[in-house]
Image (cartoon, rainbow, N blue to C red):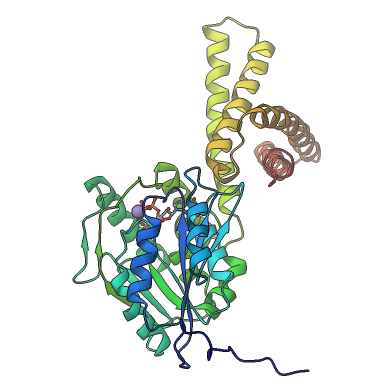
Length: 379
Ligand code: GDD
Ligand code: MN
C-alpha cells in the first residue's frame, strides 16, 4: 500500500506550519442569518494561530442562512456549509457536522452569539494538550453567569440539570451545555448510539461513550442572543424527558417509540372520553359511538405524532392529508392484530388482562413500525 501522505501545510499561508492538531468548529444554524457572519468573524479572530475550519450545518432555514454561509465559504475556504433538506434537529445537525470533519479535534458552538467564543482557545489548549478529552463551556460552573435566559428558562434549566445529574450520575455542573470541544475519536466511537432527536447532544455523548472521559468545565457568560429567537420550546423539553428515559432503559427503546407510546396513551383517554360523551350527550348507540371515538382518537394520535413524535419530519400541505389516510389504514390493521393476538391468547386460557395487554402491545408495535414506514417515512 502506498503511504498516506501527511497534511501538506507548507504552501498554505492560512494554516500555521506546526504539528498542532487541526480543529473543526461546528455551527448549527436554523434562521441565523442575522448572526452567522458575526459569529464566524469572531471565531476566526480568536482562533488565529490555530489550524481551524468551520462547518455550518443548516437545516434549510427559510431565511437563507445556508446561502450566506456559502457566500462566506466562497471567499474563505476554511468555511463550509452542509445544507440539510427535509430534516430538523439540533442534535442531529451537530453530530453530522462533527462526523463530516477529518480533524482530530471538533467543537460545537451556537451561532447566535450567546456562547463566548473567547473560550475556544482555552478549550483547544486543554484538549490538544491532553489535559482533557472533552472541554465544556459551562453556564453553571463557578464564575459563570447567565444573561441570556428568561427567569422561567433559568428555573427550568436548573431543574433539568439537577434531574440529569441525579439520573445519569454525572457530577457536571452544566451537562446540558451546547458549547464544547472534544477529540473527534470519541464522537466517532459514540456515533452509532447517539440520538438525532432533540437538543441534548452533550449529555448523550457522555452517556453513550464507552470509556471514562477526562472532562473539564470552563465557566463563561451566557450572553443575550444578537438577533432572531430561540428554537427551544416545550416540545423540546418533552423530547428531552424521552431521551432520559431512553438512556435509563439502556437505549433499547428509542425516544420516538416512547413518544409514540405516550401519544397512544393520551389517545386511549380521548377515545374513552369521546365514547362516553357520544353515549350520554349524543345518545348514540354503542357501535356508532365506538366508531366515532375510534376516528377521533386516531385523528388525535395522528396530529400529536405529527407535531411531536415526528416533528423533525412533520408532514405539511397535501402530504398531511395523505399521511392521515395512511395512518387510518395502519391503525385499522393494528386493531385486527391487537384483537387477533388478544383473542388467541385468551382462547389458550391465559388471564384476560394479560391477553388484553399483549394484544395492545402487539398493536402498538405494529402501528409504530408501519406508520414509521408508511406515514412518516423519511424522504
Ligand atoms: N441545524 C439546526 N437545526 N440548528 C438548530 C436547530 C435545528 O433544528 N435548532 C436550533 N439550532 C441552532 C440555532 O440556530 C443556534 O445556533 C443553536 O442551535 C442554539 O439554538 P437556540 O434556539 O438559540 O437555543 P437556546 O439558546 O434556546 O438554547 C441554549 O441552551 C440549551 C440548554 O438549555 C443552547 O445553548 C443549546 O445548545 C443548549 O442545549
Ligand atoms: Mn440561543
